[in-house]
Image (cartoon, rainbow, N blue to C red; front, side, top):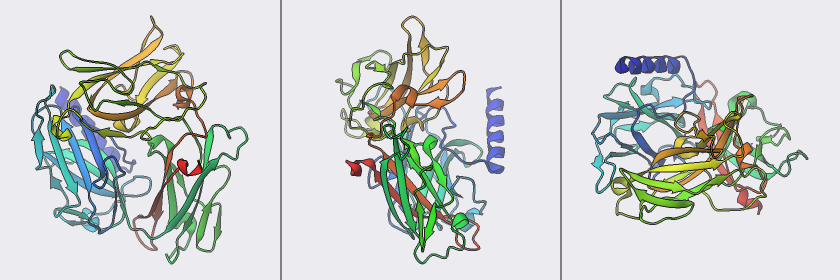
Length: 420
């Protein structure tokens, strides 16, 4: 019965993609954990590569079943909205159209046994021809309908220049809570017949999928410069610095950890988290929502980093009947689901949950979903301040005249620390 349900789910999933729904970063197979996808020059970096360069991305993950699987991967070209470009793989890929994970290692000296898979891309078997967005698909047994997980990849052909800066909001009511991003894109000698259709700029804060905004129309045009500084756009809540815990070692406590012990598995109890919505801003170092898999207890984090049940407890100053709390970060792609949802304990008025995580350093925050409105917001629990240190990413997409796809023609990341 379970196999039939899974087959039906995958079939419906393939139909959804076929009819043009945008791709997201999702894990489809239970037991797949600690997915890392970054430019090999720096762990945790954005998986962005210059076209036809020698740079590569690292694709790594653990299979907690402890058994080896038959995993394959491919990439599919997408537009700025992560819809399929509807191109044949032969058009945007050189060599072959898929590759197999042949490199794997078994965990050593860990409580939880797992198999670690890792590969670097592009390689001799899979090379992209065009710049643009690509969705990475990992699947089983060479069957693309048996998806394991998806991740977003960026191949850039730098053809524009970007000048961006972050200031306080122009709205008097938001000056203490919001940050305003202004930027200019200069397309130089590119053939741009209509800037409103040929150029699009996707902006996001700390790579949050819930903070993305596609700019399709510049405020005004000055020669070859597209200026985006309208007072009503790209005005973001500054939010708060992320909460963070340091689990690089399971032998001694570290930042935000109250207690570590071993039962049938490693257990990590975090300090009680409180509602910060009405607190004054306080700077603290974080990784802007990111996570890093690091192990100080061993020699090779990939295979001797252990897993632990990490317990989160939140005093949200709210009742469970008012809404639901979720714990999110890049470690779970900010997804609001049963796995990230906290349960409410009416006896002490607190929310709690646990996550099974590999040793490392993790940023996280809490999102509140109101029962009456259904609206999701992190500000309700975390607060928002214009002083908060954030990264803003700008992706510039260009559609050449007569082409059937969009290129990624420019990228820039700007940090609010430049305002200090």
